Amino acid sequence: MGMAKRRLIRVLEGERLTPPPLWLMRQAGRYLPEYRATREKAGNFLALCYNPELAAEVTLQPIRRFGFDAAILFSDILVIPDALGRSLRFVEGEGPRLEPLAVDEVERLDPSRAEAHLEPVIEAVRRIRSELPKETALIGFCGAPWTVATYMIAGRGTPDQAPTRLFAYREPERMDALLALLADMSADYLLRQLRAGADCVQIFESWGGVLGEAAFRRFAIQPTRRIVQRLRAAAPDARIIGFAKGAGAMLETYRAETGVDAVGLDWTVPGEIGRRLQAQGAVQGNLDPLRLVAGGRALEEGVDQVLADFGGGPLIFNLGHGITPDAPIAHVEALVRRVRDFKG
Image (cartoon, rainbow, N blue to C red; front, side, top):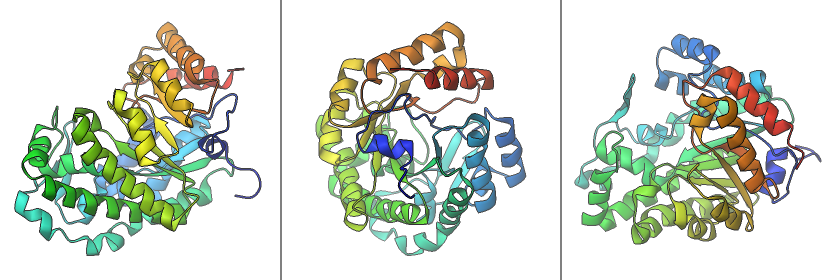
């Protein structure tokens, strides 16, 4: 990387930059016509994830179009259960479907084929890094163990993850064992991404917000801390973003106890809580993705509020969740212009 560290990494190390570095969750997605064309070429979503050439192509598309400060590897959090041999498919318009995990199957899960199974993803990371502009950071990622477990146990996304919460309450030791396995697999997977050229990694805890305090500490914080510690033992300089959507008032505990370098904020996190978190290091977020769909005044006011709340400290500008397929490209261009024009 030479002397000039990429802007995103400088912020992850605690520096304030004006304007802040900018990328968007799900920036490689269906709102882009070039993405839709490449996905069609791949045949289906999962085939796209495991095709290094096409996965690299869709990762690079939003960088070419918008010049974001970071690219994020195109993949999916469910490649980990897929690598465990749990049958996975994506149903158009409905999302993922897995064979639900029974209580007595936890002990029989075998991670031995994971490394070979995930090699195409690691090859995609190598390709992306070799083709990205030098100044653009590359973000690797995984799903947090609790979030991945919710899909494994229910076999699909559910509104409040009741099947997985019940599993956890009825079989807490088995849940601990499942989460420990997923944490160790995820740490190894992230380490491979870093060694293949990722500059930093993000852990997506999409479903931590359904847990009460005690359960959040045990089932969300502990496995994520296990990933962070295992990763840092092998790569002491690893930079890690934790995004625990819906965690709200638990975010300060999450930051302190997981050891992540930066905390992603969803759009519901109040500025006051975000600034307290920012006093400890970088924050990332947190524009409501629907302001990007609405455009105009709603978008301008939303961007300005994020910059007013967090522009005085280490900030990575982002949405508070993934970009939606109905976001107009012109609105994304307007967002980029407004953030880049920020003078602090």
